[in-house]
Structure formats: structure tokens, C-alpha cells
Amino acid sequence: MQSYPCAERLTLVEQVHGCTVADPYRWLEDPLASERWLRDQDDLWLTYAASLTSRFRWKSRVRQLSDVSSVSTPVWRGGRCFTLRRETGQQYAVLYVDETPLLDPKQLDPSGLTTLDAWQPSPDGTKLAYQLSRGGDERSALSVLDISSGQVIDGPIDGCRYSPVAWLPDNDTFYYVRFRQVRRHRLGDPDDATVLAGEASYGLEISADGRWLTICTTTDVWLADLTTDALPRHLPQEATTIMSVGPDGRLYVVTTQDAPTGRICVGDPTEPTVWHDYIRPTAPLTGLAVLDDVVLVSTATEITVHDRLTGRLLRTLELPGHGSVGSLSGHGQRAWFTYTDSVTPPTVCCYDAGKVQTPLRHAEPSDTHQLTTSSGVELRVIGKPGPRPTILYGYGGFGQELTPTYSAFALAWVEAGGSFVTATLRTRHSKQETVDDFLAAAEHLIAEGWTTADQLAICGESNGGLLTAAALTQRPELFAAAVCSAPLTDMVRYELSGLGERWTAEYGTAQDPDDFKNLLSYSPYHRVADGVKYPAVLLTAFGNDTRVDPLHARKLCAALQHATASTRPVLLRFEPDAGHTTGGVNLAADILAFVAHQTGLDS
Image (cartoon, rainbow, N blue to C red; front, side):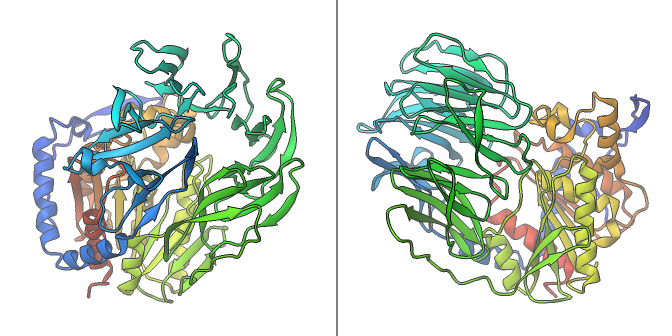
């Protein structure tokens, strides 16, 4: 049996809503109290990692496959074109104006710890509002750059985590979100005007003529006529609804009311409660671009072209392959969108409404298979038929669907002889049903001969880390290995740290008795049982993660190390200076080496 660092087990037991809840590792929530334990876990991981001789091979190949150039869809302001570009060999993308580099995070901070989180040019293209954070903590500070001189003329303003910025036509004033409140800022003025004081995750947009400001959350919409002094008008909604005023002056409304996949309506912004059906996409909407004569609508895998006046379907664009669409934007007669699939890095495609389009075809991914379980879960398999070492990857939350995407991690694994499987899990009201779908996917792969329990590993990040943690604690016999990256694991107390308090719409709240019982029923930390032969487990956590506190990984690690009767290891890989989204080549290589060793791919 593996020897693990000593972790005191408290006799802490609480009664919550009539349920008995044990929490023996509550002390690991305190980063100071857990310092020595964490150092011992670091030593354990480093000792194990040193035995994985394939780490260096994986690192080399992942770096090669990751080192691809990329460019964002363009943003046009005042005749200037703004794009993010990353050339091969660069750590971060550089923001360009036309063909001139404008903002390079590496030049701002040679240490490589500073990232460009968001940016928005002024309407005339003379100024740039941009947001920087350091060490992956995503705590953005907003500054304003004069593009001609390259000088910072305002800021930094803290508390602007991924804030939307909506400039007024005067190019000196903008609306933005600070400390989760909507504010109006004038360059050089130290005092902002508070527009909405209630804290929420707001989206902002101003119409091209500067008259209309729309403010949206997941449950509420406000519309302000900026030609008057009236406060924004609250337009409560019964479903998820987003509004904006297009360049043609019409009110465009995207809503899930009476349409589970969403529908597009149009109206007059002077009568914002009156709208009529315009377009009904066949899948959840991801983008909308209003051009001079047509409207483009994108879903995760399709773009359709519609008559601007009537919404009538004119055509469906031929894409380069059977991949994913993203980042749709439009300007005049042209629209741009990104395309990617399993073997194609994200690339920008242009649609010109005034020209006959010739589709650009890429080579289709080889050895790709579509499977469906008896319960309706769709699986995308990259690799040859098995049985062979297999990674099953899932997410299953926040309405996000996994679609074909270029992944150096997956390609390196398949090249080495494994299979990589993505499960398109349906986001359910009950998280347990999502876990059940993931378990059904694993059972299907084993039953149909694609892999075996001794060759199957599951991987997930963030909400996907919760998914894999729940799966391994409920059906440990199905897996040889599990990787839980930045996971939630203590669902009884998830609201008390990170961004947990903002996720109650997704998971429910422990304050409600029914929600609490549901959370406790699948909470991975509370499902760990003594004497069970758990699979090999690698938990990864990050010191600057402001979304999911590393305490979740610490607590589950201690619980599994105490309980497991297996000879397979339970390990914690911790990066103190990284954030939720900053895992890179080293992390990918370590995960691949760990999984390859446990599933026999290295043998």
C-alpha cells in the first residue's frame, strides 16, 4: 500500500436540515493550517512524477502540437481593424491595430505572468479600454490607452473582472462593470456614476448611434434611452433573455421563453415589451451578426443566412468540415467567424454577402466515430477501435456543450495509440442525472469493446472536475484512473469560497433543505467510503484560482488517501502561481504521463 502524508481526521459532525454531515478535513480549508501537509503532498507528487520517464516525451509533443499561430475575428472601429494574433513561439497573443502591434502582454511583463483578459476600442478607434490580470487570478484592472501615442491616459481601475465596456459616441465616456455594479465613467474623472447598484453578472451593449443602452443578466433586462435623463427601464423576464439594438435601429431579442433552444424576436426599442418572432434556430444560439442586407445566426456547429427584413432563411453556409463555429462578428457586407475541429487549429473564415462563396475544405479527421448510448448520450471517439487505453472527457454544466475542438492534449494521446472520447452530456436540473449520463458513457465504451475498465481514464476540469470526482466516488470499479482539475468536491460548502455564491442557479443552495439533500447526495467529498479500491487519482489545483478554491482538491485528496484500499496512487499536483485557466504544456504533459502509466499506454 502507498504511504501518504499524515492528515488529522477531526470528529467534526454537524446536523444540517436533519442530516448528519461529517467533515473530518475541515481544517484543510485553511491554507495556512494546511501548509505543511501541502508541502508533503508536493514531495509525494514530485517523487512519483520523477518515475514517469515519458513526461519529457509528452511535453515535447504537446508543445509541438500547441505551437500553432492563431488570429481572432476582427473588430472594426473608425476604419481601424483590431485583432488578437499569436505567432508560433509566442506565449500570449498580441493585440494589433491594422498591421501594427498595439498591446503585447510579454512586453508589459517579461515574467509572463500578466495576461490580457479583455479589450474594447472606442467608436472612433482612437482609444482602447483594456484589462490585465496577473498570475492567473483573473482580478482584472482596467486602463485606457491612447492608440496614437501609446500612452495610458486613464486607470488602472481595479475590480473589473472581465468587465464589458460600452463606449459612448463621444469616445470619452463608457459604461462598465466594477465590483459587479454597472457604472458610467468619464476619462479623467475619479468619480463614477453608479447606474445599477445591485451586484450581478451584467452584460452591456450600446447601439451604434449611442442612443440605447441595454443591460442584461440571466434573469433581468434593463433598457435606457440615453437621450433622456430617465433611469434604465427594468424589463423583468420569465426566461433567459438578451436584448440589443442593432445597427438598423431595431430591437433584437434572444429568449428561451417558449423555446428551449432559444428564438430570435424583433421589435421597436421605444416599445421594448412588444416583439414578434423573427428566427427560430434549430439548436442553441451562439452568435448573431446584423449586416447591411442579411442576418447571420450561428449555433455551435452551423451558420445560417437570413433576409434582414423578414428573417427568412436564405442559405446555410458550407463550413470547412464537421467542426465547431465561434466568435461571429459582422461589419457592413462581411462577417467573420472562427472554425475549428479535432485536427484544425482555430482559424478565421470570412463571409461576404455580396459575393458567391467558395467553401474552404480541410482534411476531415481520420479515425473519428460517433456513438450513442442507450440513454441518448452522444460520444465522439478519436482513435482506432479497441480495446485500447482511452480517455473519456466530460463537462456537463452551465449549458455548455462540448463540440469538436483542436486539442494538442487529445492529439498527442491519439498519436501515441490511445483513443480520446468526448461525451456530449446534457445539462440537467439534477447533477446526478448528468453523472449518470457520464457513467453510462463509460459503460457503453467498455461494453462495445472500445476499452476496458483497466484501460479507461476519465478527465475533467472545473465543473468537469466535479463530474469526474462524482463518477470515481460512485463507480470506482469502472476506471483505472481519474484526473480532476480545479474541481469542486465539497458541495455542502461550495458557496462559501471562490465564485461559489454566484453558482446557485446551477447547483442550488445549501440554505434550501431540498437543494441541500441533493447536493449532499452526490458531493464527492462526502461519498468517499473506507476500504474501497479507488482508481488512481490525480487532483490538480492552482494557488491563484479565484473561481474554485484549492481547498476542494485538498479535502478530497485527504479523504481518498485515508479511505482507498487500492495500490493505485492518489496524488495532488499544486501550482501556487497559476490560476483557473492558466494550465499549460507542463500540466498537460504530467496528466498524459500519469494516465498513460495507469492505463498501460506506456507499456
